[in-house]
Length: 151
Image (cartoon, rainbow, N blue to C red):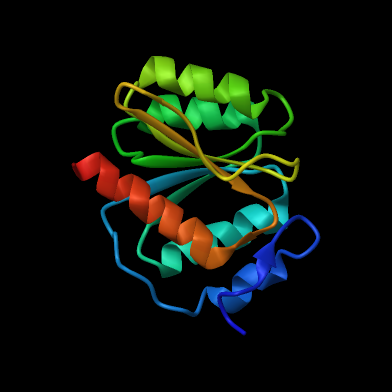
């Protein structure tokens, strides 16, 4: 059943099945995907692209910060794994918020956390998505961030 599978490090193939489900197009929106699991990162990029997002991939926290610095004006949202090598997600988030306080972020983790909004400071919007997550949940959360950006 396309779009209903969960995505995690051990079941990344679920994303490929849901990538063929068209979604609302946001061709001008760019998402930085910071994920150290190669298969999860690649399939997430594929999913986002199939839903009309532009996407930039980062393999670890240090690369995510460097790419964000280089492309902050083009990046509308960040999908950020909390547990990554080189620099963890919390440190990456703080660095990105210093660079661009209005950055929209969806934090992801396989550790038990509650879904929903973790923090909203001024124009900064941060939410959490538990791994493994459903592809449609990821897309809808990013769409909500894009809509919040416009309001």
